[in-house]
Image (cartoon, rainbow, N blue to C red; front, side):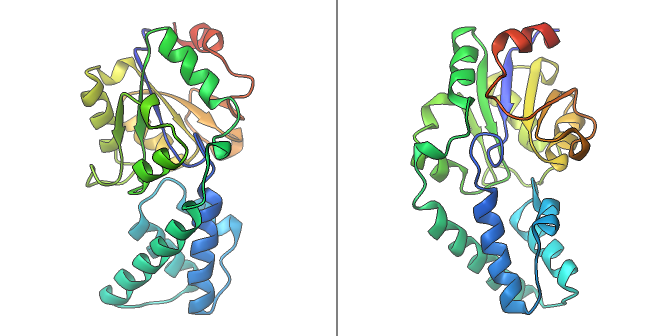
Length: 217
């Protein structure tokens, strides 16, 4: 095996914006008259905004027309944007920057592969844009995870084959997308929530390049 590039999801891997997504969706659910729990929110990880809305409406057993869906999706995004306006580099998850620096110093390229259309904005707020050799976000892809498009486009921009790519993901949809792309996968989180990853780690605090080498190189 020869890992030449690492592709990172954003939410829950590099920075914890999942809490802001949840708060925004919870407000939308409250307006629609039902309670949206954190357990319900697990189903939204790694999927697009409109797909997330469909799941939320399914939970609430609510049917609305296309125009109302567009209105709610926009409202949710505006709420979310108001929350992330205040983000700072302090919100980068522990161990992420040292690990990325290790990758760079060992000649491994780095890309972002996120369903978020706000990914570039968030990277700018947390001052992490320059760490990435390529950024593939929701504005560059048509198909949401578990479709492999976001990761395959990342490999193309980096000029590497999928077989030489390793993905870091915290959502099942993302793991499935990476698997569909033919890439190696390390899940971030709890093993019971992340099926079909090669390995699962709780985060980057105790993970380093030597560990990656022992698994893949």
